[in-house]
Image (cartoon, rainbow, N blue to C red; front, side, top):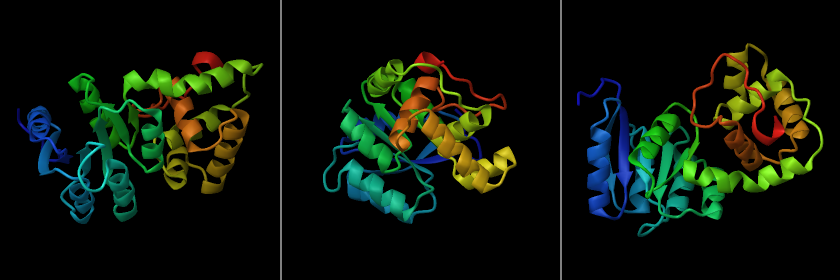
Length: 232
């Protein structure tokens, strides 16, 4: 398949050569992405942060040398703009939460369909975040339970929801202000008010809420997001 001129440049990092070969075949068939480098250790992934010809790293979690978590933290510190997609067999919330804190853009299970990985890569490249759909139900469950225990519907404004959605998708306060044509301070106030009204304690709770609303992995539309699920 012909590759576009501005195709996403991807590095594969996995200690199993057969896995990398399969991923390369899959990715190179896509017109909007191409594999430009490979590695087999977490240290190889960290070194990707020194290169300016790599846009995104797809890496395993358990590898020789530095782990995927350590590599993700190192890449976040060394090159924050680089997107990291974790591809692993570990369907574990603890791993997921720590990796989200480390700035990982997507978390995909190796046992999921190939389309899950491709969707995650495109979401990450577009500035969004993606969590494997097989994990979504389990990750959001504790938040759903707390939500159902509350009475009434939170009186969140449309602008507060818009700010929360942008924030969950990885946009900075400055970028949100530019998109909504307001000053940064206004964005900060809307975000704080929305978090307080929805009883969200930090970024992990915001991501869980975003999962329930279906905000992650999709480009923001001009229409303001409404509440869905148990809070709607």
